[in-house]
Each structure stands twice: as C-alpha cells, then as structure tokens.
Length: 249
Image 1: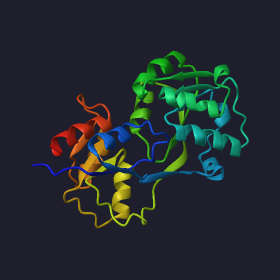
Image 2: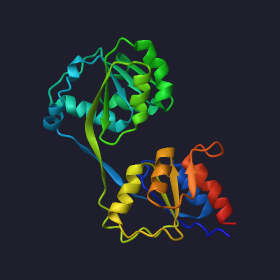
Image 3: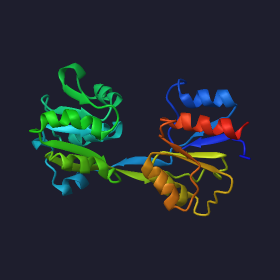
C-alpha cells in the first residue's frame, strides 16, 4: 500500500500568479504545497567574461534558451558598452521566451523567431538562416544537446558562458520532511545533497522532470518515484496527480 501524500515541496520559485496547476492540485487533494528554489543564477561579471575573448559585436543572431539567458545577454552587452544592433536576429526556444524580449527591445521592430520548447523545434527556423553567425548565451551547467544539435547541422555559433548556476543556501529549512520533493534539474539534486549531506530518503517520494534530472536522482543513490514527461503525463502536475490518486485512495 502506498503512503498518502499530504505535503509537497516544489524546488522552483513560487508562481507569480494564482493561476498555477499546482494550486489546482493543492485544492483538489487538500495538499500543502511549498515552493523553494534549490538553485539560483549568478551573473559572471563582464571583466571575467572578457577573458573568454568572445566578440559580441561580430554576431548577427542570438539563440536564447531561457529568460535567464536573455537577462544576462543584455546585462553583459550593457556592462561591456556593446550596442545591440537593431538588425540582430533573435531565435528563442519558446514563445514565452520570445515575448519576454519586450522587456529589452521594441518587439514588433525586431526579427524574432521561436520554437515550441526544444532546440529540435527551433532548428527548422535556424536552418533557414544558416548564413548568420550565432551567439548562444548560457550558464556554466548547460545541456550538451543544444550544442550537439547545432554541430550536427554545421551551424556557425559561439558559446558564451555569461552566468552560473549555484546551489541555494537552504540553511533556514530545518529539514526537508515532505512527502514529495519535486526536482527539475540535476543541479537541484546536487543542491539537496550539499545542503543536507545526511539526507535519508526513507518514505519521501522523489519526482523528477526530464531524463537528465531522473538520471541524477539515480546517480545520487536515491529512489525515483515519479517521472515526467511521459506519454501519459506530459507535465509534472499531471504526473503528480496520477500518483496521488493511487496513493491517497
């Protein structure tokens, strides 16, 4: 018999609006769901970035895989006093990342393209612009898949590591006694073990989003109880709901 689920810790920032599937889940099953980022992003200062000798101005297009990448791309340009040309083309991993550019540029006056959610979707558009010289701003811990895909299609690009992913300080969390811990990246697992080196899983269920996160759970010697995306549950909340329905019978 499965143990009932009453408390969940989602290792991400709290949703900015009340319209979140996590709140719907909490209401439906009378759960206590807390949010706490286990990782945070730190800028790599322009003076350190300079050492990589990446010439931002010689690129005609930029590939943005997240809002963080957009934030730090414009930050570095600003710190290095590089004027972002109006002709620069933006290739965004998703529509939401593309719309986020409104924070920095006059959206309708720029050439902005986006995929559905993965680098594979975006490749269809990138291949139509093969003559561009692409810049890929990223964190120090990044998915190799992006660069492998670009290499496979012989795309001319430069990798620019402009921010780093570090473990959050979770010392104010006396413990992580939740029925379910939800992770979205291997860095989150690293952070758990760094902050709680004596962590024992016992009856805590671990949920992982994405294959690399799932592998990190297993590599850490932990038990993987809930996984997404899978055909029956493309989102983490759907995977949680299916598990809770069985566990809380």
